Length: 409
Image 1 (cartoon, rainbow, N blue to C red):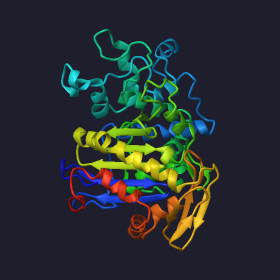
Image 2: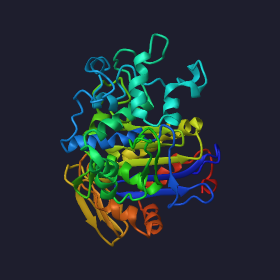
Image 3: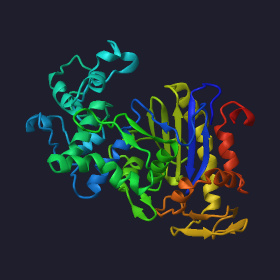
Image 4: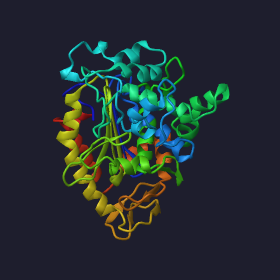
């Protein structure tokens, strides 16, 4: 929703069950063709996908000790440095990050900031500098179950991915093109650009740029457990290991994504960047992207803790009354106003193909690409909001931030 209370909203888009159901641009000059970014800390969850994809191909062992040429085997073992632990932010001696309110020196003096803004080979810096850390640092010097967020850890992971490609110009070209050849081109997300450091390694921690719709396609893919038009683009583990954290139910960060559980609603996957947030609910096939003009924790807090619970509770109820209870998918193609699905209530549908599945079922949804790519997308949105069931209206009401319908528009 546009946000008159905090006045930071830039764009807000929502996907559910194969449809772009809400799209709003709140800043003058910003529209569906405008490139968005979540800026600082706004890329790590997406950058975690490339190593997972490479592992899915059988070309990247996530549990093998990292190559990291700067360190001897003994130190790599001491840091427990594997790609999986890099994904999970669970290595010892990560590059030190400014700890927020507890920081004892200016933010620019912390090693992650130096690496991000003043170092040409970031992974090399992230590997070498922590070797000198002593008891006076805030980083874990031994492995622990609790994650430690560090841009240096992300840089090391992105370079480990690079080592899975052949040496030389051809191998580097394959690495540099990999996110596009194996992900973005597969889902029609053509606007993406990724930042790399001077050595050619993806930054990952930040520097992802794309239109709101293309970001939403990636979110939809994760919500659908990696499937697009029946093809498994991403391994299901990206979603499944986030939903069931291998480090324990008391941990919110898994291997790329954080999760949050509120009572009476399905588990929420999320990522917060300085200029926005992502929320994905695989059980309901929902993906929400909130792009902001600046860092506003109050806006994000109001969205999550003030409105998200009620919204998801309503959508979970609507899901159970509009989907089949079996594990098989039902494809509905109709030009009529009402369609009845076995085991569900009557539901009005627009004149397009819709795929309905039971909660948690892994089924292809051909309508996704058609809806998100169409040049008549606003007409599709209008149709979606004219649906006879009440859930789409509830969607709007739950996200209205202390304002009337007219002011939200």
